[in-house]
Image (cartoon, rainbow, N blue to C red; front, side):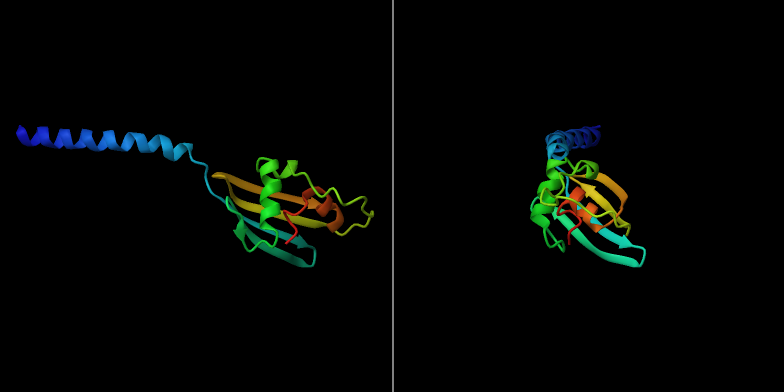
Length: 130
């Protein structure tokens, strides 16, 4: 009987200590770790790893890419793009991009084909410019 009371008391004490930590863990933002790649019909143009908060990875413009992704709340269809691209030719040289991983803890799977690199740059800015 005394042994059962000790086990129950110990279990309750452990649970009481664990409860405050469960709330803080879910409130903290998750990690951003993405693998980005670009492909043409001839093959892969390039790929890069991007981490944010703080910006790092093999992406050459990690800070700018993380800034634009934050502005779009991780939604690749809402990227601000590159305002310096004035117009693109009608050249048809499809470029497909993809992103896989996590944006602040949320799973990400994105893939889209653009008519050419100019349109890609205009619509995605620094995110796929590695």
